[in-house]
Length: 95
Image 1 (cartoon, rainbow, N blue to C red):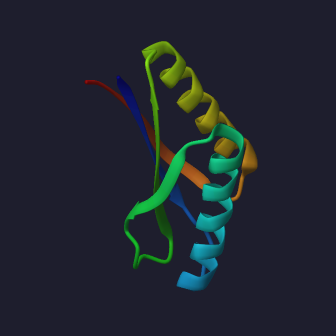
Image 2: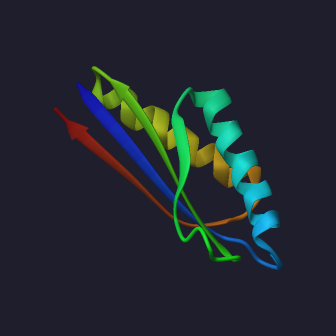
């Protein structure tokens, strides 16, 4: 079993409230879920107005498939341009 974890950190320029941040977070999570069938959640910096950290997780029996899927997810969120992507990290765990 191969588990892939994608961590994405965004900076939200000009954001003025947690409500605005949640709107961006919900949109990105829904796009990830709909397009890539991954589990997605906000995992850190929940009280910060200008920083958003999301994680997406998938499970498969093929590490190449997992890495490719998560890389496509990175490309999609960069193209969505809802927030500035500061960093991304793909971690593959084989169990």
